[in-house]
Image 1 (tube, rainbow, N blue to C red):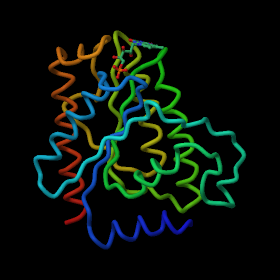
Image 2: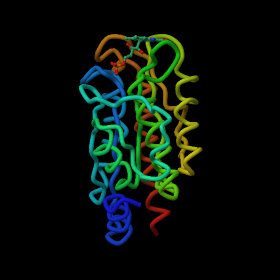
Image 3: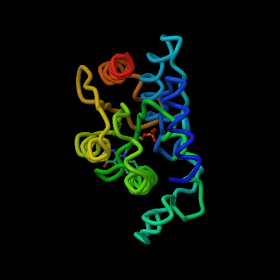
Length: 206
Ligand SMILES: Cc1cc2nc3c(=O)[nH]c(=O)nc-3n(C[C@H](O)[C@H](O)[C@H](O)COP(=O)(O)O)c2cc1C
């Protein structure tokens, strides 16, 4: 395992840090996805011992996996772009929320590129995300939320992560920026998901 991934894992375990990151898979800054992920993380901030960080994929270069399988020997991704610093933050976190808008019934390309590469590098380092807590949050104008929610859920479950439920699936409606603010149930679901993440993380560390 590269020294950085190992160190991040050990330091996290030793110091019992409670960190939850929210990855925004939309190319639109301050959009509906960001609003929802921040709603989930705002609940975690009420607990003093939880540190949170928002990571936007907007403006970052996350190329698709090329299936070179160099990660099998190198135990890191050899594609040179903005992937590695984000991956390191995922490794260091206790909780990972991945938010994406629906684009033609699917997660955005940048979200998919991130999970494809993160999933493989994690596997070839002994499953780095095992027992982390997390889940997806998805928003769309009209349709495709359930498919995209399931698409992202496959990543979390495949990686051995623990996905808490909420009061509904973590989906919401909105097209233009801020439109999601009118979806009270969607926001409440995101908030309750954040609360449930804290509950699970605290139980796991007790
Ligand atoms: C290229 C593209 C494809 C989209 N495809 C869908 C879709 O399949 N279903 C849908 O309901 N909305 C679709 N939308 C609308 C977005 O999901 C919606 O505007 C969402 O709120 C954007 O989130 P954001 O503000 O975080 O970027 C699409 C938008 C774009 C730009």
